[in-house]
Length: 163
Image (cartoon, rainbow, N blue to C red; front, side, top):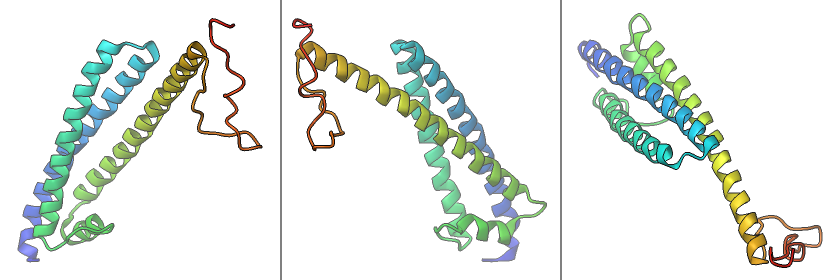
């Protein structure tokens, strides 16, 4: 780790993290669109949004590898404190730290939105499974059990023909 390399590493990190921020914002927008499409059950929009999300994630992964390479080339290989050590070594005027903090916050928001969208998908899946079980007159294959350890849906569902 040569201190003369610090300005080059700092410049490159700010660029890579800045590009990541742009992509994370695009991913947040795509996740917001996904939520709207899930709520309206717009399958065509969901297909388009999946492509957008995939492109964002692939590009973010590529930038993450570049960021890790920059850190490794400076002597900071992996670990939870990699960026803390890198920032301590090369940051001036908090440019890297501020960009990194912004990216971390965006990643947290992406995760929050993704979990929320996943909950909608799981709820829709459960609704479909319940409806199909009623139509078939069988079990919902529930993941939970009654106090006696029995599947609560087995005896309570009737075929739609019987209902």
